[in-house]
Length: 59
Image 1 (cartoon, rainbow, N blue to C red):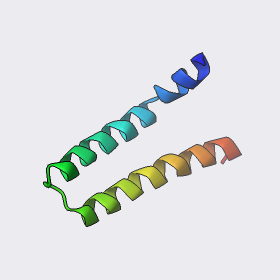
Image 2: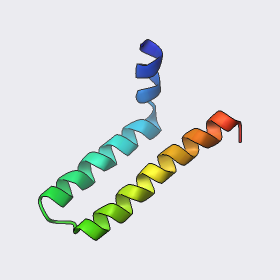
Image 3: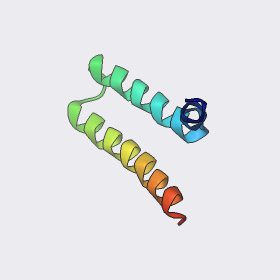
Image 4: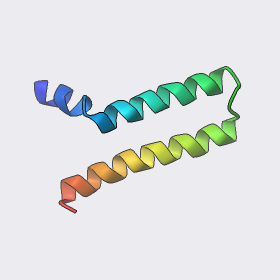
């Protein structure tokens, strides 16, 4: 359990979660359109999971 919390509190994870929350808020308050939100969110998630996979594979 502690190991999972440690991994969640890495800088990359904190940045990803913060950006997700920020853009979700902007989308809900209609300051960012749905198309822009989807593009930004997809980029953030793809980067996060892409770097996780690369690190796990040893690249």
